[in-house]
Image 1 (cartoon, rainbow, N blue to C red):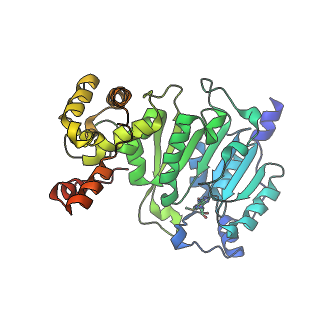
Image 2: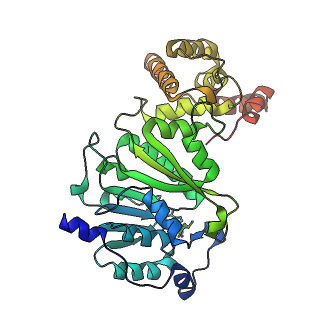
Image 3: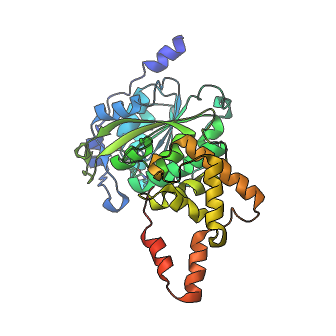
Amino acid sequence: MAASKKIASFRLPPLPTVGEIIKLYNLRAERQLSQNFLLDLRLADKIVRQAGNLCGAHVCEVGPGPGGLTRSVLNAGAAGLLAVEKDARFIPGLQLLAEAAPGKMRIVQGDILTYRMERGFPKCIARKWEDAPPDLHVIGNLPFSVSTPLIIRWLEEVSNRTGPFAFGRTRLTLTFQKEVAERLTAGTGGKQRSRLSVMAQYLCNVRDCFTIPGRAFIPKPKVDVGVVHFTPLVQPHIQQPFRLVEKVVRSAFQFRRKYCRRGLEMLFPETRRLELTEQMLRVADVDPTLRPTQLSVSKFGALADAYSELCARNPGLFRYDFREELRRKRRGQGSDSYGRDEMDDEEECC
Ligand SMILES: C[S@@+](CC[C@H](N)C(=O)[O-])C[C@H]1O[C@@H](n2cnc3c(N)ncnc32)[C@H](O)[C@@H]1O
């Protein structure tokens, strides 16, 4: 009890402000690296509060940059902070923070896309998947170009219980372009409902915490920023391998504004397309005239189960890729109108 109180009351000693650190080390934001810094420490505290109680917790901060969020994590009483930063220019400023919080902070200069987080924390903090989440949090304000591929990778790792999820149901608190945050949290029938909504929500409890206006960052990005919190579910809503679920969901959203049947057809080779699509929809009890945005996660679960059953009965079906078939057709017959129609209609839905 006394120990946790001591941790809770930790405050960083007086330090140069984030703005002063930026000046001191000449840390001009690199536009091509989409660097936008948060200087307002009250906002940084607000983001960090979304993670929950960090007293005595371990935290991996991705992309600490000049250290605004880093200060908030340390002041929230984290026992151990691992900061993974790609840009070497930020390391001296981060070292200043590490010295001000002795024994609490480690800095890794590296790329979060390749960093092996399993190795970053002591094994003793791991919890069983069914238990409460471990005292490990991932927090970050990353460039949008990194946060979207990263969340897709982390969702796959949730399903495989690897990476940060080798320790249990590790919680994530991350920033995204506002529109992506809305997609991640959009419910069935919602305007922003997309592939990303289904993939995130079948594996995690996803919470859209709040929006930060772009003007809060320096330099100001063109869009506002959404803070999203993820807690992996004990039992995913869909009990099929991640790659299979992704294939079904991706196909359904291929033609976002059309009946879901239209996209799902692309799971099957042309010769058996209508027959197998009809079978899948019947077994899954899904109305073929619903739009993909109108399908709930449980309907996607029924579709994934039905598709898995069909794959078990039709060897080689899972490997079928309609794009390959299109390419073959094009090579054989030149560019045919069927192929062009298919590709023109595709939409970016992630
Ligand atoms: C949008 S800035 C935010 C900086 C700081 N967290 C803040 O809120 O002020 C993104 C930071 O992530 C770093 N970064 C970008 N890509 C990264 C990657 N792949 N791995 C680790 N850090 C990365 C950038 O160098 C930069 O410091």
